[in-house]
Image (cartoon, rainbow, N blue to C red):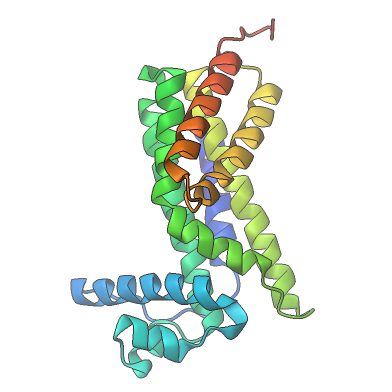
Length: 226
């Protein structure tokens, strides 16, 4: 299991670390708070405008940061997008790791609730990620690298979901576990969209029922698949 977890971590780090030039990493609490404010502002600006139309000036204004300070932390818009990808990856995988720690004690219904709650917590950043994924910045090699990173990010998150399942139901066959993890990932990706609907509360309640029923059916299967 430790080798599986190390591979998941390497995938997540690789998905978020290639590409844009690195800015200054803050060492003091004040600097870390400033970076957090910049990233929060960037989520809002990218979600509203898309990557192409968003500007560093808008991010600086939204975060109440001097433009020079913004560029010290993030030398380019690509570097800022990289940091957002890294933060989303860190938050998603950390949340799944917490769920994995509780997984053996959770019923399928409670596990479904935990997954829905996690995706609701990530809803704002998930919307921003969708915008970045949909943006096409020509045929430059950077786009291909960005798409590769997003593919690795999806693989890393799917690996963490598989880890949650392996802790909850260690007798589930590996091939089945991988398929179920992929299905759960696709279902979970729909949760932020449901949260934006007019009847969001009702739809999210239905999603909890659907996930709980699915997990109940999957996790009740023995090691032989019978």
